[in-house]
Length: 397
Length: 110
Image (cartoon, rainbow over all chains, first blue to last red; front, side, top):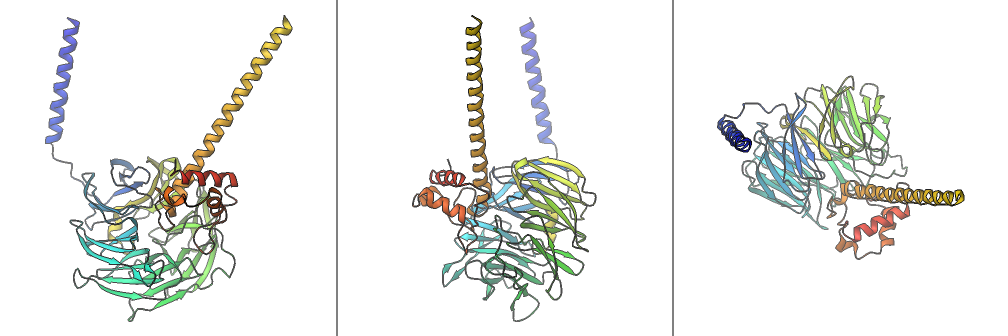
């Protein structure tokens, strides 16, 4: 009797569960926007965490994206799709609403980031191997253009791929010391302009948020090179020449990133290389105005959207610390240790929250941008890059 | 009789202490290796890729590393390659650590 009752109960429960499941499947998906979504790259597991930045909680996880060490992302203009650039040459289009992979191509052997065109129709990837860039249709990920970075020394590794106004992409050749402009304004066959003499081994670059200047950091010499995209002909100009004063460089255990450069009033700030310093530069003349001595080799120096403060993280082995620098005075206003291996810093688009990934603590922390109080944590496996969808509407990221 | 008991207790204590010591040594060796492995995968991986197939820095997979002796690899790790982005790790890593990493790479990260 008891056994029979048990069986009946189990059958009833199973039936109810399947009915509930069927109802759930029948339901319309919940309508929602994507403007407050973001993704966290889980570098060792090849997965992404999709999160709600307002509620500061994880929504879902997307797996199967390959080697995501040093992965980065850009977003479609409707902020629904993320394009993920993996280290292994994988380019993946992810639907944030359905948490699924829409398209995925293995487009090279070894890659280092990419960009999306101003009109949202083209996505470009910079490759180390084989050196060059490839450009894809954002709707289908069908290949639109293959631009080998050929120079007298063979094929160069490419770095610092950025979008610029007028359906253009700019990128630099690490080995050749050149910057190329691929102009797609007249269709899908690009016009290529090559700028030589950019300097010894450009390692990363940025486009200012107004789309006017392309700035390349140099590994092989003390200085950076700027190209004013409003001028014709385009002419590379060296800035901050000799900022190291001829002193021996400190070991650089991780290359700094130039993607986010902070405009604070009329000054920019950028990480020095081989020196534990931030360099402040006049935004009109590109002359150095002052320096801030910091805790270690800066990796990211990220300003909030208001430019008020600059948050800085550091290279191994000093990568457990964040310093916040006041952009008016150049002085450090806050310093603390979020945990082992602080890899990335991302401001909310209006600047109230700051997202910080702490790789070896398997957590992403959310801070109040002004009180520095920790508001929330999201668990993630070896988190690295954090990307909010609002990036869709900013140039040069 | 008492002496015998003392003797046994003494032996037991010595054995216990020795076992604890060995276990500690094992776990600290294991911890050191885990730390080094993480460093190689994650931090060397910044330039050489998490799977070691290269990036800004060259391929450091087993097939390529087989062409170098462990001490040659350790020397590159400790002193870097001047004029390239490969920094000297001396100061952060001991010679023993560098040799461990060299062997680890020659075994393909195992």
